Length: 258
Image 1 (cartoon, rainbow, N blue to C red):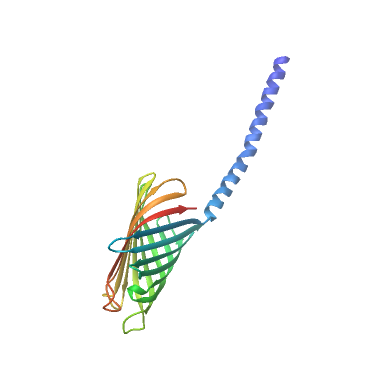
Image 2: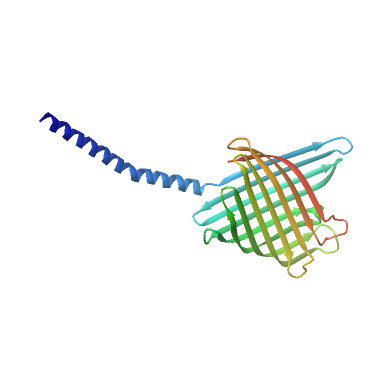
């Protein structure tokens, strides 16, 4: 009789534990889904700050800053970025560049997506009061592994330029834009990145722009990284003979991620 009671109590105990576990499973799934939803709807923000000062034969100061934000909601992705570059050489301003960009992506499959992008550039030392361009396009993830990521983007873009030098006041034209992005995770705390943009006029193919950024980053902790980058901005058709075709910038950057 005593053994039957023990057996009955044991059975009841196991049934109770089973019911508790079963009742917790949906709750855990709901909590996990909610956590994933919060993560998906959150903006990932990244702030980069650079300052270089030299003295001696040449006194120069370079200040650069960049803010990027991206967000994913279901099959939609949103990207925003803004960066500024200011340089002074022997007391005279030699660079004053502002770049604002936004892009919307709609995922069609695991690799293919559509996009709509806009860009605004103010760069008087390159001969422009401002440049404004935007349009639709498509992108494809060529590589998407743990260590390597390679992405290509093609866009059909309308461009408008307003000049700060030369005889022409403004120009508008249709262009094609090709972008390549590569990232290599060398180690868990060390990565290499390369981005190349090529923008060419359909009407005058000799009018094109080529921009590239080569960078390495070392992660110090979860929110802080140190980066080194080399920027090249090239324009083939100059608005005036006094403007140089190529601008290059070397930066050491402190990176904050939120």
